[in-house]
Image (cartoon, rainbow, N blue to C red; front, side):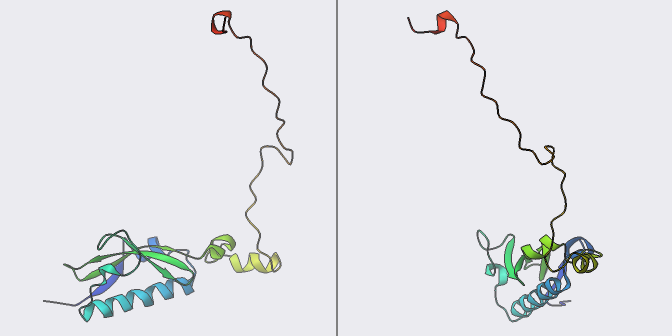
Length: 141
């Protein structure tokens, strides 16, 4: 019984696409569906995307970010294993709960998360190394 080519997330949707902005996930799913259509027409999709050689894990650009996938020809399966959103979506925390509320309350410019500094606004003082005496036997005679 041959069902034909299909794609799926590994291990599941929540693990791979959880917290990723919806527009990126939609684009990844559209591209995965296109890979399935190509494979169904007999095109070898194991060469598509970027990767070291035919087969193995592949990387493909999507919506300013990229995703990693594997092609399993014996199972007629394309497996999406990881989605990386664009950098600006990582910066603003897009896709996380409450990010829109935070962005509207902070004005138009996104802010990075506060990380406390061990120096509390001061630069550490750099002192010159103390001179040490060189033992007599180590000096040239």
